[in-house]
Length: 513
Image (cartoon, rainbow, N blue to C red; front, side):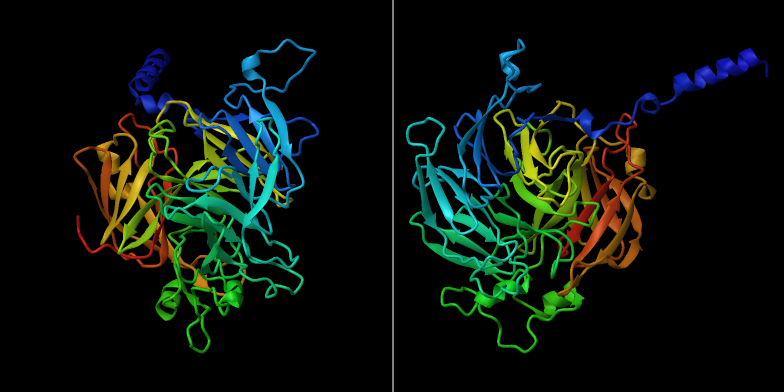
């Protein structure tokens, strides 16, 4: 073929190729941009709590693990800068930091004016729940008082208190880290517990078995959840429904003989039974509570933190009603879909946004639906910087993602954020799945065990072109199921932004819909 005809043929092929082939592969930043706040040189903003000081959500309070509370003004600046008297600046971009107090003992959460409680800003310090009030509005706290909290401290490493968050029962909920080091673990009461505090300041222990429960928050139904970090008795990070019972870590059992304890150990030798797969542990330890979601390590983070339900009504994209979880060590935010099966929560975790500047310890929603994230590495690493504040803003573009993943007796039902290409979405070869389990044991963490591939035998696209029903052989209860949908394309021929999902299947539904 003459060269000119070969050139014309190649050009014609390129012109007739699908538009998706000519488009650059989308990135997370195309849909969710990050706005990083500058910090004064003398401000070490090791953020450990975020809360709004006003109903309009314009003034952001930030507490730090070093015992300070700051208020940040002009937080919606698109290109935030610090005041500089030597330069002419656009006032709409100048952010201001004002210190409201210092000298607190490692506050790890903030909550303003909880319903039914005396007005004020509440924070869980290491030894108590504290109420702070700025009585004259000068951005300085005039009243600092102990409001409640009868837990003890022994001076051991890691005796953190996280919270508070308000539950649908009206009480304030707090999670207490188990202590580490010094051989004093059993000396302090209520370590490794979740507790509640009522409007009169009375503390009620709720449940033992927590290890390092850095995240606390409700789903959109108002049910309280906590995250726990990988370690002894915790195979990998997890998201758990915070209900009475035993959540697995044994340090809290040192307080079960106290008269206030709602949990009593079974009168059974060698309880709890450990060193077995989680499914067997659930059978042999009826009091044990299984996580709703396991976060595979390290793909879905290494130190899970805050729990935040999307209450923005669509201002943050197509995920209203779903739950977001932060991660400290990997400086990322994950998205969780939760459902109730057999009366208990389980669900899937999806990647969402990585590459944040600070480690993600705390999150909150802005008035425009943007997500504020802040944190401190505390020397453990994570993030491009060891501390700071960042704002995540939806660009208005909808990413092509798996939206929901529901369990079925013989597979899963997927929904997508955009119409799918019926050919690729209806091809079983576009999907793959593998599954594994973890051991419940006293050791530090665990690796995937018994990993095996499962066959995707059928993929049926729904009439809406935004759902697919997968039939899969060999589903296992109390196992993690990793789904990959690498072959699926949307109507424009683009692949999924994140083709992977991890579903923790505790129970199989009985209906075949």
